[in-house]
Image 1 (tube, protein in one colour):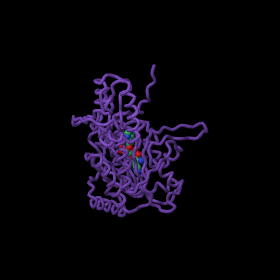
Image 2 (cartoon, helix red, strand yellow):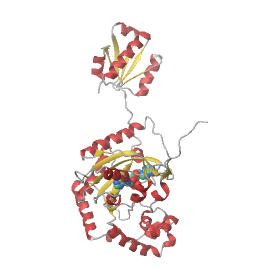
Image 3 (cartoon, protein in one colour):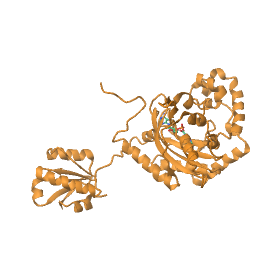
Image 4 (cartoon, protein in one colour):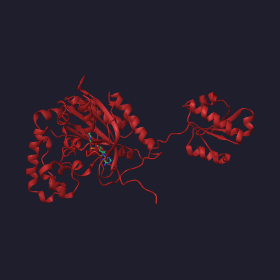
Length: 415
Ligand code: HAM
């Protein structure tokens, strides 16, 4: 029996992978406009890194990590997200030494043991960006504007930006108490998970999808009414700069993030098109994370998008690359010449496809259609004698006779 892949771990096949390459290329191009440099960090880290940064009482750390003891008895985890690893690397390599402001982006697979469904997988991919060392809300607006710029470049205008502020750890403590008092009389309505989290992480019930939690939290006090003056000022100025940048957003005071490191600004880019998996990208500020991980006292902010979800939003679009030229050749001498021509054209930067089996002209033309080649060169025995061939421009349906000369053909078909 053939061996299948693991549930929640997907292959990305030719035909689909072109869409991914497009998403990655647009991200690189847009992020570089804003001065971000790529960083590549390993997939495996010490488990402690994620427990300390994402938080012991989060779903990710409690239930979803791929953790194991390696052959050297080390407790290790396949990264469930990128921020912790990037900050670990930032601290370890003292990237702050010359300048505390680092603008970094990354792309790659992440691993969470979640229940797979459309838009939710166990191996999924993120493209993320992080900025360190800037306290000013200018950077909050800049990071959000870059994220929206990226989606606009993809032609995706539907995901909506929602923002919130979770305040600093001090105001959060106060808000937790207020929220717990509010929920106390409604504990019975909460789902089992939220009941359990009432003591450790009561804010989670605000964005829980269960009907009881929705009922229990209706009319709950807003975090925005419980943040201190400095955090409120940061939020107001973030909104001011977003307005200045022309970046549209709505405020969602019930947005709670599933990772504990957030402070102040948090945000999500939400879509109505992916069912339950509404967040295409998400992130926020983490002003205490770098020092919690043993680094200097520097603030940070960033986001990550789920590439599978972005690809689903681009579902209808075809990113398959078209070869510049398909060469159809009839008879052995023509095939031999076609092969030489093909090699020379490929070396001259022209993408070329052909039929390797020497089938009938009709079947070779069908193959050219299948590849959706922009041009087809037909070399028949008769044309070969004259050193010429027929070049068809497939979309226009026009054709002309050309010399069997790589330079001349390249000049006609090269993009
Ligand atoms: P997150 O909200 O856990 O944040 O994940 C960010 C995005 O990754 C989500 O909005 C979603 O698009 C995608 N995602 C998460 N889990 C899955 C899954 N199981 N299957 C498919 N896609 C998924 C973080 O990871 C933070 N590190 C973001 C961040 C960066 N905050 C600051 N900097």
